[in-house]
View 1 (tube, rainbow, N blue to C red):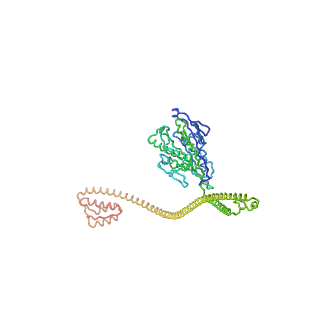
View 2 (cartoon, one colour):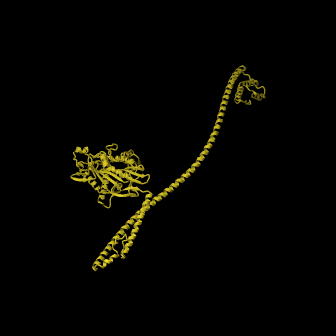
View 3 (cartoon, rainbow, N blue to C red):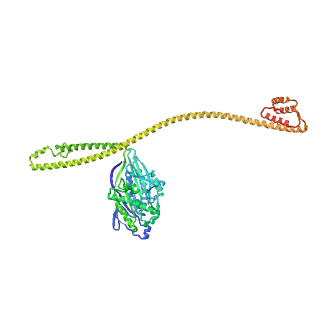
Length: 609
């Protein structure tokens, strides 16, 4: 919603740059003659603007004179636009941007970035600010996002208030001048520039840097919003002078076409025609609110002082003079709260009721006057209180001719009164219709707000229900986790006991392995000695035969070996129960059996075939 509308003309400022090196070497004449702060004379013709800046004007002087106030306006809830127009190489980019990180040479955009935050820091602490910035260019009639180069053909849409905006453009929240400058540096590196005969860094696109500021008072909940468009237009150019060719020539054609559309819009607004061709180009479509709409607009027309550019300079000055006649209807962008909408609705409703009562009273008096009924002074709404029944005494003392004359005048006055009452009734009806329209709008807005409120309440209820379910699930899961933890603890205790038992078993097994190893070592020593003795025995015996004394001896041998507790006893039994037979094979077989019986702590008797 907007506050009271205030009409204001577009503010037009003219700035001349100094002669550049090429113009000096060419011997060009210095054309302008400056007369006061608001007039420049070219070829004997004066051109008046809101302010004229000569060639020696500093960047700071330009900003303080024309751009500083617009920052306060935007922070006060107004929309603002500053844009630079002029031929190529006339100083537009120098005026708008300058050298971004040079305190002396930086232009309007970086100074505004600093000034906005300086103002915010000095304002009421109860105000909350949300600042977003966008940066895009219009190149070859296509809108290209300078903060996301993948978005190369964005479209222009309208919001609910029929205000154009670029849909899908990247928006960055910023909280300091440094963050704003980082965004500007990023976008500037993606902008289209080219080299021409007139400019080494000629902008080949229209760039628009948008600052969107929303503020809310914490206590009163009053919301204000303001937008600031900072536009650096591409330069109009003559192809014969710039030497454009190929792709640069195509760019020049599109630049001149869009600037021509801007000129047509300016001319239509200056002449007051009913149709303004905003839709002829995307640039004029985006700047629709800045040209004849809800905005406080400042235009810089940048000019060359060289006689070589005489025609272009005069054309630029004429363009600025036409733009100076355009009137904008700027208003504060105020967002009402639901309570404020309700109060406004009640106020409009009361006003409508008073209008209806007045109309009914006037209609009643009109019927009485038409019926010839006299009206008295007590009828406050009637202007005919001077005519009453007391006039009959005067009629007696005047002539018939005078009476007829007075009656004719009275009838004439009645007719005039009827006409005026009809006109007044029409006016009141129009006011009533307008008030009803406003009331309907207020009622619609109130209904929308109530719907949104109910929707928000429903969402809150759903969220609370979800939170309750989440809390119940959390309790259940917590209980399950506790049970699992207890079970895990029990398992851990059991595992600890098992591990202790396992370690004991491993210790016992290790001890048994050591004992077994010692026994195997002793048996190996005994067997080695035995083999040595057997070898000697075989040598002595020669080819004798070893025979068993009796078939029953093996079984008795098993029983005796089982009872023997020492290795010496085993060897004794071995030699006791065997006799010498031919060869040593049976004896070796028996020695292997003896090894196995000693290792396992038991003796097995194998049947000898």
